[in-house]
Image (cartoon, rainbow, N blue to C red; front, side, top):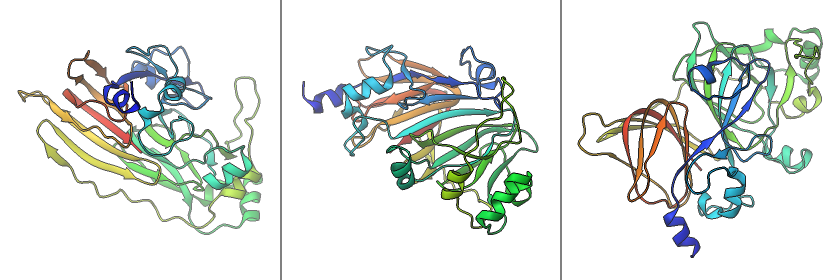
Length: 335
């Protein structure tokens, strides 16, 4: 079978995530999203990942039980026609439940990571807020320009908080966090994160917390100072979002950057006599993350995929035309 024919016959499939029990996490990913992962707390689920620190598992179809990493190495055509890194997925998609504040942190860009971190990718990320407590906030950069030594001293004395820009956050907000931006997710925030496929996090400050063994988590102050943007940051504004309607579905662009594009899809075919068409692409795979409701994804002549809140579906490039039915809110990611 040729690569082209293999592409055309590739079917979507559900993914099973890897879970992380970081000390700041809660239980909402199990309680609200039915993850059924035996971790407490359950801070993150890596919904679509080929990263060695937490690869996703194919949960259905002929490839069930394989890691997504192995499957994409066997079928690199599933990623599309753009050059890729030896069949590896260029992005990582997470759900994050911050019951407590995350550390104040920063991520390197690609150039720094390539040179200093054994050829790894850097990390630009995007957040879509699924829920937030009444007074929830995010940390996003600094109020005014900082000097490295002044920042270092504030970290040593525990006074860094007075220099950080804290941004109120509410459900349905969108934030693009570029590499080099000092940031932190605040307590009470539940979000979906789309990022480069990287696990490089440099912690600047961790509130002097200790883990279950009574040890403080490692800080990475020198590397963080090497990569951090110390210029003042304007408070991030919500992007202009325009819903585009077609029968049974409304779509809006949330974020587009050099690494990924994210759309929100509102599917409602309850009053339609036909399913809504789902657009697939030749140049890129697509990932569907259901963040509300439920539905059915149907490929003609194939077994339907029933999906529910919290499910993640991988759609290979050049899949056959698909249709979708149900009442659901979904994030669609492509590169």
